[in-house]
Image (tube, rainbow, N blue to C red; front, side, top):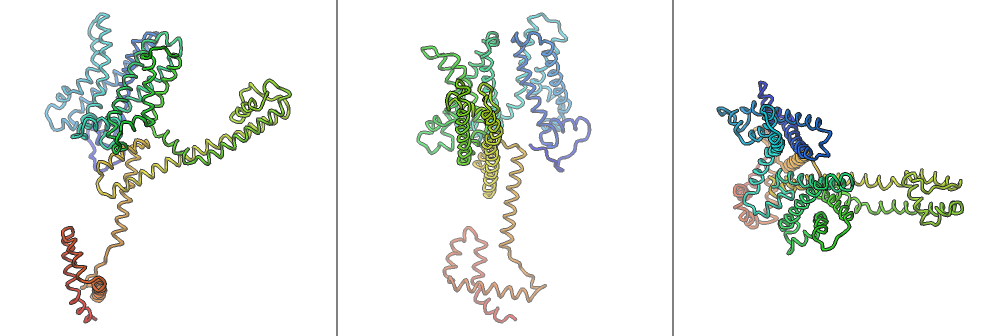
Length: 547
């Protein structure tokens, strides 16, 4: 939630209530609950990674003191968190007003997990143990990963609540794709997959270093197997849940449309190198397969809208970009021809022909040249100076165009999102489809909670302003006959004359039939209109006698 000031929230008094309110209360918008939760979550992940790294001798050797200091820092933070949560338990919503609140918190699941995360350190400090016991306690520190249950369990419960009554396939689709009922669990699943993509890419890159591969070959193999397993499960799950995708629901073969979609082809390419390496009857070049595994990096395009936005920019501005590229190519060919003309006689081996001179022209225009081909004649050097200066401006044109169009496309996407919000709010309360749209668009555009709240507030204000204008345009001023009898009589005469004109133009029978049609949906208004219509003729006679 955005940190905004709300005067409706009571201010806590006392040290411990203030600590709970500012650090652990999710309803107190001015506090640091989100920062504390995110900080502790990242520290859990990093500390577990450090524990795993301790068992890799080349990484741990010579850095024992650094690992020990970091472990002490983690223990200090986790101990402080455990103590503060225990001390402020009476102000937790779950235990508020109950007796023995701290004891109830101490025996709760989350408190036991927090205690298990720090217990091995204190146990080893007060009890004499042998080497095997110490090694076992070091491994027990991996139980810190269970502290993540404080985030996963509530997310799982919310996911189950939001998807109650839906099929397993629908739940799986909500888990993998942003919908109005995906919840925070979908974000955790996306982050988990992105983590393994980055880890597998780092492993592929470091595996190319011979000295590192010689030491960590087994670890690299384990990472590759785990990454392949995770990506395969994800691919099969997306293929199974493809029928729940709104874009494919009307198709006779939704899974075939899913299979040939660009992001899913990338998912297939991410697992294909492992299959080729281990199941083909003949051997392939391992260097090719290692580089081919870098295709997994393209999986990150699923979790960012930058690539899609870039394609939209190129498609929208292709004429301008083509014009700038054409100017660049024209300049390259002309300068290469001049370079060949000036330098061929002096350097026939370097400026042997125009295609070879094109290389010199490109590197000179795009940068300052690599030095492998450089003119030696006065005219050639003068041409190089001109090219270097012109290239700064010419080659900057496409970059400027793309940057400007990219920013403009983001603005268009956000305006379109705001327009969709306006249409959703015009229908009243947000339904499931509208919430799914908001969730999908906010994730695609990488909108923060503050951005979403601001856009929704602007949409609500626009709807209210529109309603006020419509109400003002259709409002009728009713005069008090006791205060302004003359004006009231004139208004009555005007209204009766309008009713007479309406009755004469359409006929009383037609008006009566129309009133009968709407009698059930607008019963009070219909009865009132019928009475007014019946009173038109007597009212006309009364009107003629008014001054």
